[in-house]
Image (cartoon, rainbow, N blue to C red; front, side, top):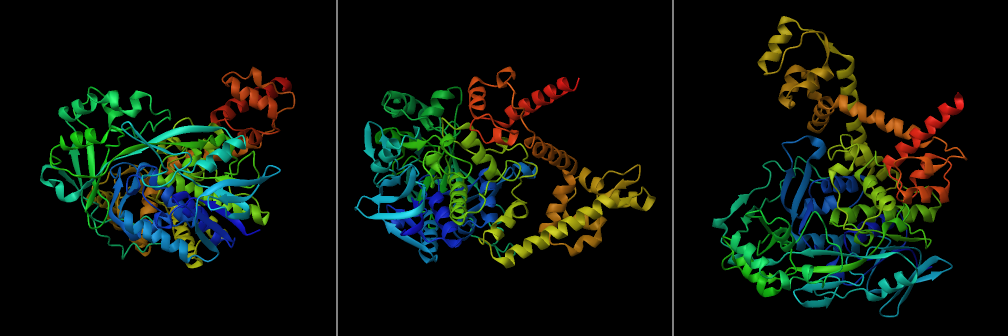
Length: 624
């Protein structure tokens, strides 16, 4: 074999897949159309956001590169939902799209065990339903034990700008026609999706004085747990906020007949939660205006991205609608917005390892699996890379549960439910989000990164020390109580907290009010020995301790439930509440346990709960 692992595509999924593979010791090849476009921001030059920030933190905790690169190239850092509970907060950073790309390219080129070829994968080499390598458009043949496809929007990609259609995977770059054809010939269920991007505008032609300013956080926090918080002091460029108006809406609505989205020119299904501006105007006709974020793309702020104005309208319409907004009257468009249609594999064709069921040793990660977003792509790429190497070694696969990580939720949703629209991560998708917070991703997952050799041992020891301190403090808070003496009540009153009437454990005292670090140390000065990070965790754990306990109990019950055996004569057709599709799949597979049932695509956690109830009912009936 030429290589152990071949990764096709140099986007966010391909980066994490190839780095994980190479860093785990596998001889790896990254095949990408343009080396200088490794890590390119095809759409918005930003990393993170609500739920997406969780994914980046988890990728980082396991040893991925996205968080480190974001810290090195970010130009504005903010915590979204900062006023809400920690479970639904999301880190977001505007990045310098040029520096981000250069950083990732340099990391790739400097990584041992990792070769890079600027070629386009044209077809897969498959023998006896097992992938053996790839052939490129130059006729080069590369063999490998494992192949990971991370082709993004390039598979049979078609760009739409008004009536104009271009065969491309990204503006100015070739579409991958041959590889898509190869997929179809192998019998995969292929669908068609659509996404889009916004116009970019020359910064010197924008009147920012007519817009609202949106600053970054005063004390920004890094994305990576491996970035030193004490010395983290990034440049914080402001973003601006503009608004559409009735004139904007009239221009867009008056050109609906020229919009590929409405004319029948586009067949692919677009992202429901990130609609184009023409789709917004059509769906929300009662809205007087829509918010548009004017975001710098680089540190030099020469070019701005119009976040919220994704479009495939003709170029003349794009000019008119942008110039109709206050502050944009003289705007010059550098790059027009466009929609892009592309092929994707129905993710129910995949195992939880992201290996395809039909073709052995072939993995898929990123937008080719029906997802949208850099963060979802990076998470899948990391998991595919790790699992490819573990399979090479003959070791157990790495599968994160829904109770362990957002990554586990993401992959489980994809391979069990599939998707007919671009899948985007939300906090609401995670059943155990109080446990799966951004702030504790290192504690939850870094032991995996250490196990796979993806994390520095010194960093992992710091995480373990942090975990030990949190456990020590939590034990103290649970085991020790305060009594309502006159002196103690006066101390509570002095910090503006409610008095207690009975003997109360410290965990409940700290958890019931609006405690911060200052108040905590006044009440428990012995906690001054702990770092700020440890104190943050202590405050969160105290505030949500009862809810966290309940979620942990639910997880324990779920683990116990998955080991339940399904009787051989169990009739799934008699289970009320299951879809016909699930009943059919279960009847064919006849899984011996509920865990076996959970591995079948389309069988949801809710369906497992129902089956479990019926099994217990059947057992009670037999017991009589």
